[in-house]
Length: 258
Length: 328
Image (cartoon, rainbow over all chains, first blue to last red; front, top):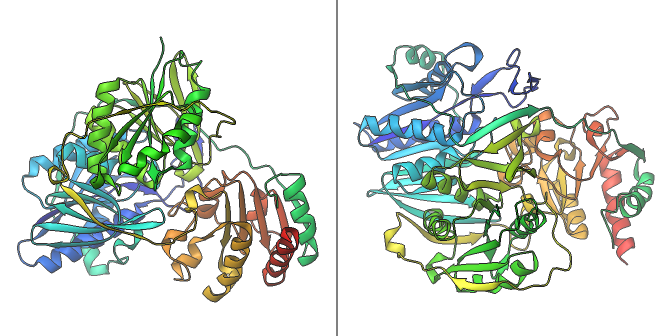
């Protein structure tokens, strides 16, 4: 069984984001990490590999820059430290604002070049672009069935059974293999690599796959900071302020009526 | 040139999702700028999905196209994408909109890949310039906003629910026609074998009009009962900060923030939430924010429209009592 897991270098969610020159973010002082959902997808891939036994392998793939904090090599190393067997880097020095369909095409090309596989796992979303697109696009491009937002995944008898957390309900979906699955946080427990795992990761094989990037059909024409929040008013202190709060919500903001 | 719009609508139990109706309403408002082309609603689902045709017409659908079969309820991304692509090939729209619900965000990227077109996810702003859409979408969970243009046809976008308003007093019912379902469940590699309601009778966080969220200030999971009661009185949905989800007090499906749900309700109550940047990123597009926190310097007060500084264990019971008296 071969499992691909696609990962992305993203700014830490605690990072303050500053827009530079109206088109990109200022990366200085921004810590980049393995996508938090991607990390859970890697953990799940490792668990499936361990359950499958000998001969199974987990291949981490990442499209992204190769320089500075944004270096996708570092995030592939994170995946290797979590237990992936080898990494494939698709270099893209203009990865910021890249059309997600281009990313999906590059990943599909890299995966097809490797031959057979059983599963492709991804995080449900990258916390920077937040398009939730690459997984389902990859399924369509590979001609493989796809389920998003998985909170459970079991593989047996040539099939994957996925529990999908949709809004207000859960679906159980059976997929023929090979299949593409994007994972929620609850897909797997978070794993923390030990020092020896990090050292071992440095010796695992890394390959490069080149993709001829194009502009695609999605163009970011400008990046802007969010509107400044307008400071509101402190209605008062303690429970005595409650009647005035509801008075304002009903008659000033007009957000409530009874 | 008149640009035709296709809105892929989401119907559950014969009723259209609010986000889908908002897409139709927005398409109607932009109709003149788009040159006056028809707005068509596509309905995919079980036989009862057709029952939504009237509501779709009232929000501006000139026509309603239905692809229905028993096995198309519940949602199946692979099958829905195939039917949506068939409809787009038949109708040749210039613009395709899908509400950015979880199902919509699952469906739209598949369509983009099948048709090889650009796709803008989760848009909060839409204007028309020279017949083409100019879209605004939050990135980094709202810490920045991207302006996006789509250079291929059709232009495909998913508008964020609760962001675009509905039409008032629209009445015309659209003409209904059928779209053939030209394949069967066995032709699809994904089979939905079960669906269960995880939280019956409660509006989804992303579509809720009022949200009452709690944070670490609640001190323990048992104290969320107080927020549940307030939410019940207000017809609201309960949310949570990452801190309390990480602590295991609430399920991850309740989490509002950059690694949870992004919400834009009419009214958002942040109770005992200090306002970490991660949380603010998920709720700052709410139309009105109320904060209750004992720390007057908490960052949440910088984004709140109204704040009460005080002990939530005194303030929240008073809120419940006061709402009950207003309703009496």
